[in-house]
Length: 157
Ligand SMILES: [Cu+2]
Ligand SMILES: [Zn+2]
Picture 1 (cartoon, rainbow, N blue to C red):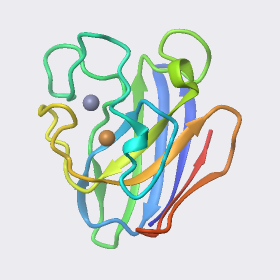
Picture 2 (picture 1 turned 45 degrees about the vertical axis):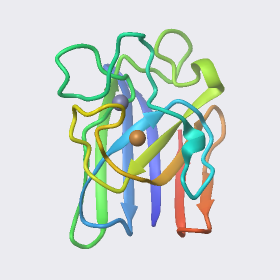
Picture 3 (picture 1 turned 90 degrees about the vertical axis):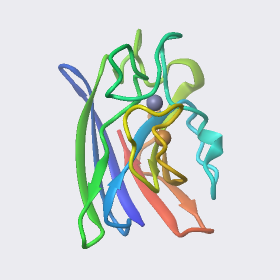
C-alpha cells in the first residue's frame, strides 16, 4: 500500500485527507490513535483511540460522547484506490483544547482491515491495524515503512 495523508486546519476542526492505493476493496475503519508511534507489523504502539474525555466511548453512532479520534469508514474502490476526506470536530492543529499535539506530542492515523460498526468497544470491531501514519509537529513528508506487510504511508501536515 502507498498512501498520503494531509491534515489541515478547518473552521470546524481538522480536515483529514487520505489518498491511497493497494488496500482491499470495501469499507475500512480509520481512526486517530493516541500515540505518534507506528511500529509494524501490528502497530499496537499507536495505542487506543484518541479520546479527550473520560466519558467518551467508541463509535460515531453512539448517542453519548464518542472518542474525538473516531471517523467514518473509508471506502476502497474495486481498483484498490481510496480517496477520503473528513473533518474531525473539536480538534485543532494549534495549541489548546483538542490539539493533536497534546499529551504524547502527536497522534497516529490508523487504517484497519475491516469495517468499523460504529458501536462496538473499543474500536468498532474493525479488525487488524493494516496501515499507520505518524502525526507529529513540524515533520513533513514522513514515511512509515512496514517491511513485513509492505505498508508505506506518507504524511503531511
Ligand atoms: Cu483504529
Ligand atoms: Zn473510538
